[in-house]
Length: 454
Image 1 (cartoon, rainbow, N blue to C red):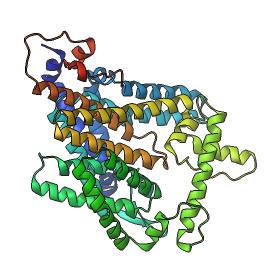
Image 2: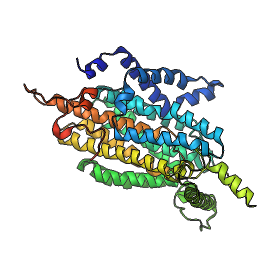
Image 3: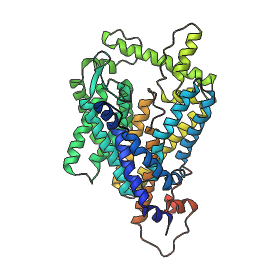
Image 4: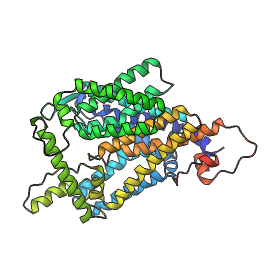
């Protein structure tokens, strides 16, 4: 019996897989934070599901399967460098707390998603869990949002993504999975209609946050669709996008439209004063983070400690610091953890994106339409979220490791589906060590190079 068959028949793995589905739903929907707010105390729902899921990941070989990927090794190197940066932090206990939280609640999703699903049907279930989480997140956005910043911007009334910009970035990450639910042939008509309406409302919420970074991210997603989408998808977007833009202009408040148009610090319009001041502060934080990167190139000022270091440094020279985080995920890492961590981070993201492109190419080549759509939606999520966080400080959240985990398991699904569609031969080449671990005898042209991305 191959290692793959052993893993498939392992009841502990199946149990872990169901826990992972629940954990994914909780993280994407953010419903656990809503429950804590509504009932008045912390239910520890995420912990109750996450701890046994992590134990299952360790006991069922998911870590072994995950670490065969180059992208996963980049993430491990990034985490190790974060640990090494702790002794050089301006506030060691604060950095230690951030790093251990990152390992316990964020990075663990990489191993959950890359190593637990072994079949395309299981991978589809994971994508549906993301889609359901996105659906609930939009509903929460409908009933539990407030008008912040003088009543002009939508933000959540609670939680870790309450900030308007963070909420918009979260929606950009989650909504493409709802699109997969709409496009999947396995989806019933009524679910497809409801999901489509929810998707459109989610786009409206994204714009209603008045996040200029989110607007730029939507433009990047549109370019990605034109690049990687099928001809029918491209035509639909070219026809529908102007209509959606007209509707948005008609229904969004005038202050939101004005803010979305303000990208400079020189605006004199009364409605865009806050936006101009925000742009000025972001530019200052960006330039400061670049300076700290050059001053502390190897280990930075400490994971999560940019605002502390900036405030203390400005105070010592008689100036008034902003005590704010750098609003750029790349300079956040370089200034807080050093240039090596920055390179590992970029390597993980780049490897993941190349893997997504390869999945879509191979799926199209072999007529695996549903997997091709899954890869397409995964690419939209990565492009949109990455563009959005170029203006935010969300480096130590689960989003990117989760996308890497999904890409790894989706590629494994492509290989299994291709292998299953080919006739059996009497003589089969001996599997390589990597194939014995994965339980997959890939064809020479599609050999799953976890360790090398061409």
